[in-house]
Image (tube, rainbow, N blue to C red; front, side, top):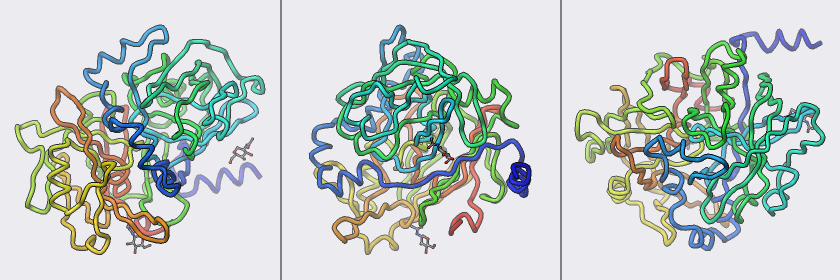
Length: 410
Ligand SMILES: *[C@@H]1O[C@H](CO)[C@@H](O)[C@H](O)[C@H]1NC(C)=O
Ligand SMILES: *[C@@H]1O[C@H](CO)[C@@H](O)[C@H](O)[C@H]1NC(C)=O
């Protein structure tokens, strides 16, 4: 039985891949909005959660300042996260729903010792029930808005799809601040950035997979479905899924190891506006599966919002009249001489509130201080239109167009 299953799985697929299906669920932001608590929440949690997340990221050496449990300012932008997948820790397995986040590097889940309200709403890791648990005892903290997520570190057997990682260091959160975590549809976060970004001390999950020889190639890839069913996409560890995209793959060198950071030649808005073309080095972009929208320097984004006729709300979101979507200009990102174009249908977010459709601009101001120049954050709005490949062997990112059947349904 087991053998035949294995054979079935291998037909048409590359060997040695760990696949995790992702589901797409409403973000904390949508749930707050539906409960009519969004405005109040955002008023209490300004400044901008996005910029807080990245505020301390440069220069990169600051990541090493944290020692002996002192925490640097880091923030997972879980407010907007909506793609989630399952992992398990321990023996017997304990399942958790996590955000697979290329914009951070740590793995954490709630601990059974956590008494925060947020933990009560989620799966909690029970160390005492696992025979593979190893105590570490060091403390970690991740800054979030008005408080810190705090925890202790441990080691465990980790299962990600068909890949089993031994002795993976991870964080057990014993304190989760704030109200937003209560509404989060995920238990924890599994970071896939470079080790330079790690908050915890120890080998990040993907580095451990490589070190333990669990993968055919030191590569993972994302297919995020922008549309439709509860199947939200897939992350593949160890290679790519060739049925999801069409050749060629545009390979782009990583410019700075931390985030998956690359060079962005220029951003164009249907011939009318151009951003980040000054100077021969263009500007920088980060591919971030844990961010929902596309972020850019406030100065540029404001111009862009004006140009597409998006109007600000009291809490800094930008609304567009839904009937205008089909007439909106194409916004294109030129990367390594290839243009990645998004139509209005693709960069506007639709949400239903009280049976009424509301439409949001998929662009958001995020000012990231960087020595390398302005940074754009390419979140799910961008990444759900293309297949993205993250290659640690060559320190490069691959982008390819989705195959036809991937664009429609699965
Ligand atoms: C964990 O998830 C797997 C796969 O979905 C499932 O087979 C298993 O029963 C789950 N385990 C628990 C303890 O819920
Ligand atoms: C969603 O998919 C349907 C076809 O399945 C398509 O007609 C529609 O335009 C898609 N919507 C978006 C926002 O891509």
